[in-house]
Image 1 (cartoon, rainbow, N blue to C red):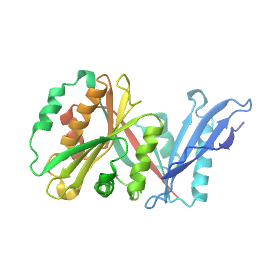
Image 2 (image 1 turned 180 degrees about the vertical axis):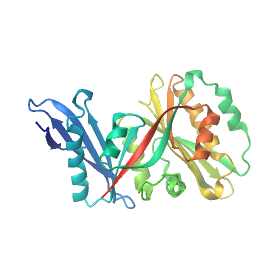
Image 3 (image 1 turned 120 degrees about the horizontal axis):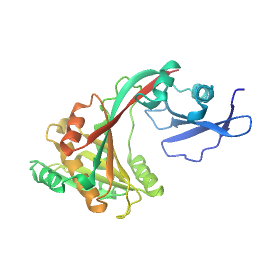
Image 4 (image 1 turned 90 degrees about the horizontal axis):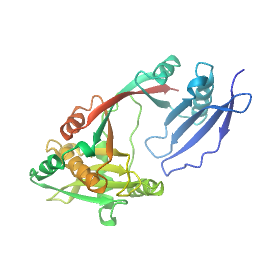
Length: 295
């Protein structure tokens, strides 16, 4: 008997996206799986949707995932989306499921981890002490200070040319409102956003940034922290600013909670950032594949 797929209401609306949610259940009402479809709503990405499908291991190969996928793809069409992207760990059931249903492989991501308890803080201090003539670092926790907000929002174009393989990703358009909303959303869920920015000293222009989200915002917190964006404006690359900024973020995390692990993910063909991660001691943990369904 096919599963019953019910659309639910999701309250997780953000300034840049909203989500549609479905629950698949059996004849007895027992949940079998779920699907989340994130619809991006900001300029530059209104063509795109992001899909997550999860099915209980005991219920796989019985049409549950397909039913959820059909509901989500149908909704994406109704929303006039051009592409649906989904991610699966390499070698997982999802890695076989998605291409069997018409999704094409567009990007490979390498995930890596740094255990602070096993890391030498002196290594990161030495990186910070290496001179970068013409540049200095600044940092903040939470929402960007008002005096830096426009400067920082303008620097976000450093992400425009990040390697995205064949993904129809579009272009994320950042302004002060979006920068502030992103930081507030992280704080609302109880985490702490720490940002390091590289500044061109002569002009006062922010030319690069690195974001690290710490769990819980507590010095006693244990678990995983997550690197978000790290990027440098094209005209200021070649000065090891990415390495510089990430080293400062790592030292901040070590002072806050030395038992944390820091996680990062990088496109396989983003060789410069992978070299930065290697130099800082990150070790690969697994590979994920980004798939895309063209509507």
